[in-house]
Structures are given as structure tokens and as C-alpha cells.
Image 1 (spheres, rainbow, N blue to C red):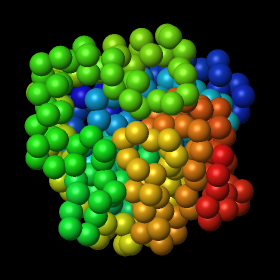
Image 2 (image 1 turned 180 degrees about the vertical axis):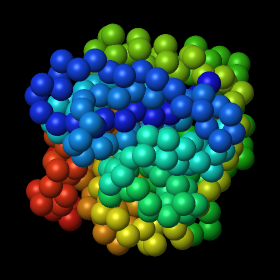
Image 3 (image 1 turned 135 degrees about the horizontal axis):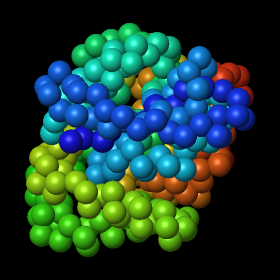
Image 4 (image 1 turned 90 degrees about the vertical axis):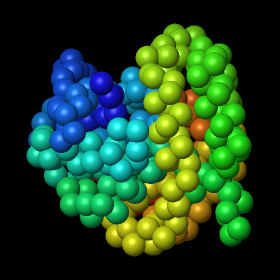
Length: 287
């Protein structure tokens, strides 16, 4: 069972009283995917796509506030097809899709395979267009950038999964998180299959999205953690330079999990983008 998506429709402060709708869809390859709905039908729709080793519960600090503000396989290509299956099954249109880390790559793959159908705009959170190094690219992942580093990561995950889950949170944050948040993040990571995570990373880390990004036409918000330990900030910044209609926002004090470190600022930024586009977001913004 995969848990990839959280979808946030609706508007109005009364949405705070609406409990999340936890349910499943079955994808075209027969896999059950868990998703949650927060807020009300009828408002703008936001679909949150989490990153590698995470789950929909990584957005527990974001889904309900965004709703209240008025928003509603083992390969990247399969996950992009899962996203298509969700949008189709629920018949969602004019969607603002938000991808954190690997979730951004899922969105890029969706656009490459299926075009921009059903999408209104997109938000990418702290992801470089290529994780591996290449002759013309040195700004990918700091921890998984070639075959040797991929093998080290796979061995760590399979031989000491609890240690990986614990260390991953420390690596991805610069600002302190509440103890309960840390506990939930570790618990959710440990629900995954370590071998499957290794296989998924083997696919993810090799894909170069630089040729695709200039072809994206929808408005895009590119959010970068200046203190990110996962990517050098100029690697993630490159996304905003490659996408023609993109604005980049730097979270100056935050790391890779900036949406957890500064949830109020993140929620406000995304909600404003959903409702007003680039009206209040300059080409480059520093928070």
C-alpha cells in the first residue's frame, strides 16, 4: 500500500470543524493509495505530494491550515501515473499541486507524461533538477549523487532503518521541531519498506529534469531552504531559473523540511499563491 497524496479543497474558517476524509483509490496497476481530504468541496484545490521516505502525515502541519485559508511503484514514472489516477478518479480540475523534495520530481514527470491537464499551477519545495553529479552539473544532492553514494544510502537504510529514520530528521531540519512532530515523522518513515526505498531512490537520483523544466507553461512557485543540508541552495534555485513562469522564494533560516520548520510562513505563502497567483510574490523573495 502506498501513501502519497493529501488533497485540500474548500474555503472558509468553518472548515476547521470538518474532519479529514480518509479513503483510498486503486491505481491502474492495482495498488491501493491512501489520501485525505480536508476542507470543503467548491473552493480552489491543492494536492500535496510528499517526498521520499515520507507519507501524507508529513503534511499534518499544513493540510488543515491551507484548507482553512481557502485552498483545497518504485519508479518516479509510476508515482506520476498514481497522481494522474488520483486527479482522474476524483475529477479534480484547476489544481495547485505541491511537491516537496521527490514530490516535485513526481510533478515534473506527470507533466512530461500527461501534459498540464488538470493543473492550474505548481509549487516545488527544495528539490534540485538532478540529484546526481554530471559533467555540466555539480549542484545536486549532498548525500546521494553517484552509484557509490547510492549504495551507501541503500546499505544504511536496509541495515539500520531505525537509525536512518532518526538521523534523517536531524539532517533535514535546522529549526527545532516539537517532540511529537519528530516522533510522528520517524514513525511514518519506519512504516516503509527499506528495500523499496532503495529501489525508488535508484530511479529518482539518476533522472535529469533540466530539459523538461523550460517547457513547463503553468505558473510555478519554487521554494528553497537556504540552510538545506540535502541540496546546495543554488541547486534548488536552478529550478526557478529554468521554469519560464516561476518565482523563487528563499526560506533563509530553514532546511530541507522548511514546511515543517516554518509551517505558518509556508502555509501563508502557498495559500496566497493559490488565491492570488504572483500578486504578492516578487520574482525572488526572501523570508
